[in-house]
Image 1 (spheres, one colour):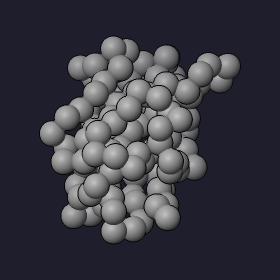
Image 2 (image 1 turned 135 degrees about the vertical axis):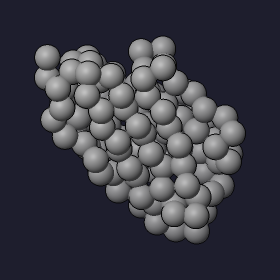
Image 3 (image 1 turned 90 degrees about the vertical axis):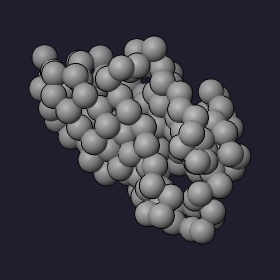
Image 4 (image 1 turned 45 degrees about the vertical axis):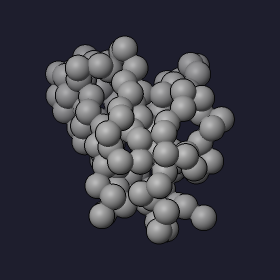
Length: 124
């Protein structure tokens, strides 16, 4: 069973930066695709960014492209989300998710393991 623990959320002013981390337990992390999803109040959960098992393939939602960077360190069982030029519309709970596959999927139903979420609030 994979356990995921996010950290790094908080309150930041528009234009600022935050770095989210997601630490995973277990020996199979390097074989999983990972994703960062976010959910704002009253909205559906959306995939913000994702990364393949090796880090060679990445995905970004159009709304974050050019501002967010996803990366992973398989030796540390950790995936990161660097968020720059934050906007108030980035305010959401951010979830780390693991898919038991080498490559990511757009559907959150395809991710079997989830963290508890970390709140990101961007003030204007």
